[in-house]
Length: 80
Image (cartoon, rainbow, N blue to C red):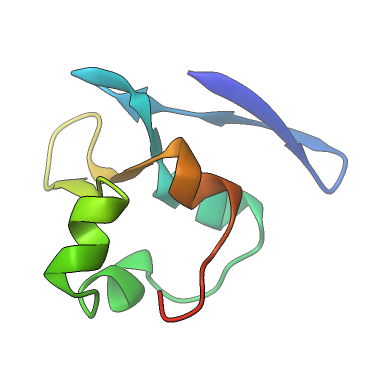
């Protein structure tokens, strides 16, 4: 897990249970005040983008969520 500061609040961001280089996009989305469901964005991504940003989804369980590598967490590229 890592801790980030958003809007004067400290937010804990989970890492993927099997790969600590993947960060939970759901935690970051929620902390940033994002509205809507993150799956609305990720379900429309093409396979090339999914591979490039190592996007992985876990459906169910304690660590469910959408995870991506540091590159995708640090910025949002055009077309994503």
